[in-house]
Length: 520
Image (cartoon, rainbow, N blue to C red):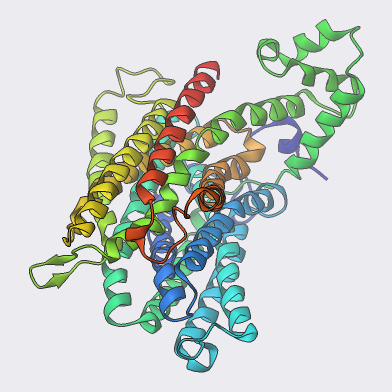
């Protein structure tokens, strides 16, 4: 049975005893800050593994580079795609707190399994051999248990943290997402420095062991906040309600009498968006809230779809950019710089910009109305998409120069890759942070986990799109001459042309986004 909220959209919170939450005791900045602390640790574990899985798959498990690159993009893509499932569970059946705990335990079990494999040579293939069926089974079981856990965590943690904010003030919600993204970047900074150093100098055994401990600590910290959190009761399946609205609107599509009365009931906004859904109200089992819920969700989808192409570019930082860096000059005096540590540059910029933005926002909050920002979420997303296109143009130029230098017997410095890391890193910050706030704020109260998950799902679709584009380009170019991205030697590939194609596709996508953002 659906709760009152599921049918009416009334936003009610309760405490750990099941009573109505007291704003003085439950929620607020103290409770929301715990979500930020947990995000630091969770993202540290996720990124440190995702960034370095290519090397682990190639050097320890003896997969080819192309196989390893696709395995990583598929793993990351699956992790973020499963956020929709995690969000569905958090909105429909469990509280977001309980959903987080369950999925965090699943991720922890996956990490333990990979830790055992990294420690036991019997679970690893012999030199120059591919993994056996049992060894591959252990690898993929651990890998996709982690992906499942990540999906549930990333769907529910930001929504749970935002639930602790004061919803009467949009500025409070905006501030939470700024600091949540700040925490995400802290985790990324630690993973690209300390964890990368440990993996390259102490081996995978230590990396996986530390990840298990850190994730266990994150789970304990999150559970410790149980008495001070405020919770939302699950409102039943929003997917079922949306399907019922579509089915009813379809059955009544030819009915016209009484439509004016229905429009009065739903409100003026129904005249602007998806008016065909109003006919669902001819069915007595469909409420005005359910129609509004469906209309709101549909309105978010074009914005969501317009961000996928940017995340396709982001996938290159975990695959081809790592391979580029491995054959470039990585020495700084006597220190060998890990390619993955180039993410430090954009992270430092982001970590400096968020407190600056918060300071400016607080300084001018008395001059701004409730619904206006220094840079609202849609504008942030648009700026992020523009930077993604620029980053691919820069990446194409740098790869062309790298190949040219290699042909002349020179090795380009790995620091040249810093430009594409910087531009894509800032692009990711603006786009993802803007999406998290936009989807949470615009979502119906009963669908906030699912709608927040759209931000991560966009990342998933981008990573899968990257794999598809690589396959298509290799197929086409293989028939014409030779595969642009198929060889083991990057100097014989045409990665620069691939980056050029991504630049053009991103520019066209930016124009598409501008159209939908203006229409929203």
